[in-house]
Length: 231
Ligand SMILES: Nc1ncnc2c1ncn2[C@@H]1O[C@H](COP(=O)(O)OP(=O)(O)O)[C@@H](O)[C@H]1O
Ligand SMILES: [Mg+2]
Image 1 (cartoon, rainbow, N blue to C red):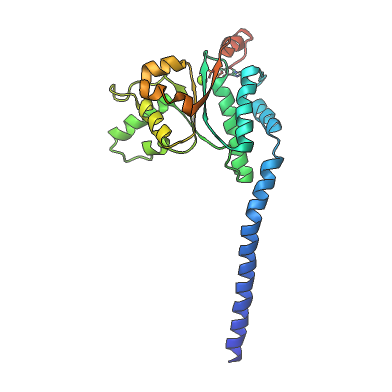
Image 2: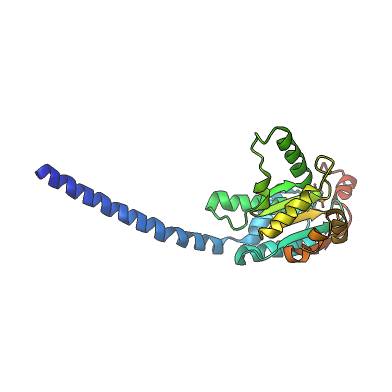
């Protein structure tokens, strides 16, 4: 009898501590999340990651514009995606690599997902899709994954036709628009060339899907070569 009483008391204590733990966890998590988001120094983080990924990283108007997009969206949330188009070698891929690296640090160190996005290239999507079909869908690649979530597609327009037949990226962009999924794109194609290649149904949706930034200039690859830097 005494033993049962003792056990009952123990159980009560256990339940109480569990309740406190749960209360503590539920209460605490959003608080820490909020604080961390506001104290992160976006520009400081950008500087650190740009130095890490690119020796002699230079800023210019386009870099600042893209940084502004991510800084705004980091603090206020996303509205539209971003399409950056223009010359080869100006640094389009590099800046997205830097932001992606920052986003990864925020996820790993703070569990903050707000800046996170999946990164891939258009040629990679086509080759993985073809491989997946050829292998009877047995691998881990699933095209439906790329119809949702935040996604950055590099080198739009550099891919071949899927099975020499159709434009996979037309389908992906169309599905993403339908799902209101946030898409970021870098490409050497102008919006008109995107329309020509992927058709009216993609072209008509571009303004709804993207803020657009035109980035023209001398290739940094050439500059790096002239200076004898290894790139
Ligand atoms: N902001 C920058 N400052 C200095 N060098 C840069 C910068 N951005 C890119 N680079 C250099 O130029 C090369 C080409 O950049 P990349 O981002 O691949 O160009 P794009 O994607 O526009 O073709 C990079 O490998 C890097 O060495
Ligand atoms: Mg590139």
